[in-house]
Image (tube, rainbow, N blue to C red; front, side, top):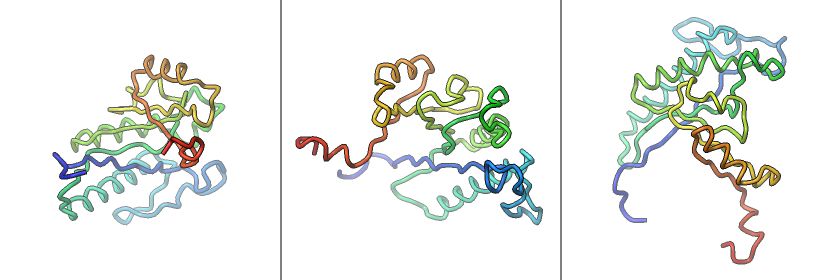
Length: 183
């Protein structure tokens, strides 16, 4: 490829601090993660979930700073969960995630450090139309047409345009073996 004209920008994921130890079982503990500054975190508290995410982000930042990398820069972070349940989504585990509370806090923190905040939801995931209110800078919606052809590329692209997101493609290696000239 030759010498890169600039450093490559790296985006690291942020794992979702699941409220319950076994995320769907509300009878399991919410105090399973560990301590920060000698205080045991309880993921039933949004503040503690935020503290755990900050700890993770700061750890990644420290590793990048220690690395003194010549060819890459840490440019931002992306939210791993592909859907964002909100209070109106009572049929879907809102009370197991409460992401709508956590995400704006993370966005503010990342923006204060001059990092981008990104998201890669699946096709038609909860939260896509409201992505801006969560503080994301960029959203890459998955087409999902490879696994679910009934969605249709036109339909997926229409949704992307309507919501002001970008496109993310996912495929598996077998797609290359399906047609002789595909290599």
